[in-house]
Every structure is written in structure tokens, then in C-alpha cells.
Image (tube, rainbow, N blue to C red; front, side):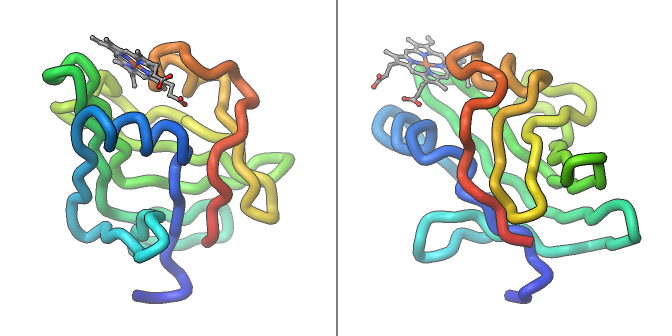
Length: 133
Ligand code: HEM
């Protein structure tokens, strides 16, 4: 556990929804803090980006809902950072996908390109849990 880790609770209402109906699993080296947020260890940092490792998978409706947030990266933008995640065999995401726009204070909202990830339930700009990094 290090202060350089990324910690993020994704979106509480989504986590609650999936935990009620299915399961949420954490894949190392990610771990889950007692407050429910996921912790992704830092693997590489430059002046423009920080790359973290680990994954969290959400599964419900007998696999009709199956999405994974894997190896999140933060990259500098004009207004803060973009948060992207990698594709995985268990996820409809096949390449890196920018999922959130992140303000310098860690406040996060759903990016336009992240809308499909949540099956269009949330509009672009919907608040997500704040990140700490
Ligand atoms: C057979 C497939 C599915 C069924 C039957 C289903 C059903 C539902 C239902 C009934 C709700 C409302 C739950 C509530 O208000 O408590 C809901 C919400 C939601 N579903 Fe699904 N869903 C399916 C697939 C998916 C998939 C593939 C995703 C993609 C990630 C998804 C993401 C969501 C989200 C983000 C919400 C809103 C959760 C919230 O913030 O309250 N669902 N779904």
C-alpha cells in the first residue's frame, strides 16, 4: 500500500447494483480498501501520465452484464486528467477506453466515450466517485 496508488470507488450506485444481483471481483495487484474503494498500485509515472495495474470485474444477470476496469491510466489533459482502462477478454472494451474526466482535485465524471461501458444508463458528465492519486 502506497500513497502513489490510485484509489477509486467507481460509482457507488453501480457497485451496489452489481453487488446486489451478482458479484464484483478484484484482480491482483489491485486490492479493495475497507471503505470499498479499489486500490491500484502505480507501475509507471512520467510528467504526462501515470499507469496503474490491477482490475475489478463486475458480473450480473448470468453474464449479460460483464465489464472489467483493468490497468487504469491517468493522462494529463488541458483541464486535468483522463482516466482510461484496458480491454480484456471478459469485457466489451477491446482497446483502451477513456472512461472518466478527472479534475485536478480528483473529482470525476463520466466521459463521452465511457457512456457505452455502463450500457447507456448514465449520460456523459454523470458524477463518478472521486479518485485519489
Ligand atoms: C440482461 C441484462 C440486464 C438486465 C435485465 C438489467 C436490468 C437492470 C435493472 C432492472 C436496473 C435498475 C436497477 C435499480 O434501479 O435498482 C438496471 C440498472 C443498471 N444497469 Fe442493468 N441490466 C442488464 C444489463 C446491464 C449491462 C450489460 C450493463 C453494463 C454495465 C448494465 C448497467 C446498469 C447500470 C449502470 C444501471 C444503473 C445502476 C444505478 O446507478 O442505479 N446493465 N439494470
